[in-house]
Image: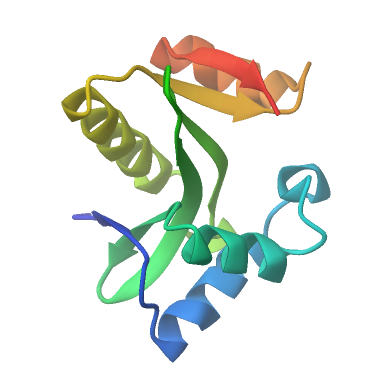
Length: 132
């Protein structure tokens, strides 16, 4: 499944709908510190930090990619429930790593402290885990 990864800067109405569906499937802890999925999406787009995976003109997964002085951080990674286990998150992660590497920065994952799922993802990918 060829998933194309992009920074979402000018989302169409369909993109907004897709992003809402992506984060509708997110557990509550994933939205922290944002008050809602809409707030997370609006902030990510407004700050140019929302990275998303597209397949057949539809956004299937998204995350926030923050460019820090010492490293880049990927956080709030979520894929629509109906599309999970098909490599969408992996594709977003790989592209974020490529972009960070090209900028001369390491990529870290950012997640709530002591979150086991995030710790497992960091261990599988060899990325450092930073607390949100």
